[in-house]
Amino acid sequence: MDRITIRLAFRNILRNKRRTGLMVLLVSSGLAALILTDGLATGMIDLMIRKVTDTWLGEAQLHAPEFRETFDGVHYLKDPSSLTAILDAELGVRTYTARTMSGGMVASSNNVTPAAIIGVEPGREANVSRLKEALIEGQYLSDDNPSDILIGYKMAELLEVRLGDRIVTTSSEVEGGELSQALFRVSGILKFNDRLLDKEMAYISLAAGQKISGIGDGVHEIAIRFHADANEQEVLDRLSQKFTTEEVEFLGWRELMPDLASVLSVNSFSTLIVGGILFTLVSLGLINSMFMSIYERHYEFGVMLGLGTRRRLLFSLVCWEGAFIGLFGAIIGSVIGGAIVYWLSQTGISFGEAEMSGIMLNEPIKTIARAQQFILFPVFVVILAGLACIIPAIHGARLTPSDALRRAI
Image (cartoon, helix red, strand yellow):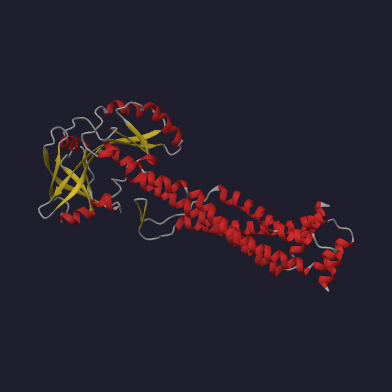
């Protein structure tokens, strides 16, 4: 009997092809919109994470305990070699780099501006951040030229300097707080497309940074990158257990950027909300269509009930009709949504320049396809279509033969 009910349901939805086509189009459009929304949200999250981790931050960092609270150079890692030995032994760590950080002034013969003066390891830094990739003019830093300095294009415009020009940095030494001045030559101009990195930071070699800070072999920060195929949380947990001393603070990028982590944590809820709104509208349209179908078939239902058809069979018949509409809509919607997601994964969508949680988004957002978009979402659509037909199905099952025949006349 169930097989006969399914066959009847399939035939019934083909009786009015125009209405069925419109309902399938409505369901497929809702599913395609949901797939596109999830693909865009996932792509935006991926872009934000890459902007944070690839550009400068890394997946994790080591600092002296009070450095991030005060950004005072007096709080530095005095024995970085013992820390890097632990990182070398961790299989999940791909690479790392040490940095010094000094707040001060950068001056040219034309102007002066406050800046963070960052000392970096040229070779290692190129594998951790995009410092080398951001170079648009000149040459990258080298250990052989400690007097070279890299500045952002916005800082270069402010200072009115070009390649080869001399600039002076002024900062205070850690021990004693005496002012330390150093002369550097502009060897390269950078463009990160990030206001902070392009305008307020200058980059020198690690040795030069240690010298102007007066911290010897110490460093202020160690940025860490993990292997792409490593389980990020497992690596973070293992390293957290190893860096348990009171002299070291170990934090992952989520702790370093708590505002961004909060935004990312609500992504699944945003997709759920959008999906709920879309399919509430789809369900209302489907309910309306099924009620119209039942009203047109009152005579048919009255005859079936008069011949002894059980009410539960009428109920299941209407629900199966809705499920078939949902199935066809899910198939077509998955194809349309998949095609759009694939196309936008190649071209991306540009929203201009926008800032979110302190992150400048100025690159096209490329959609990302996930398995749940083509497995979980379509199944959800079919189930929802069947559930949306429960109210019309109850109405049809409660009809009495005499009432149904009288309404049909």
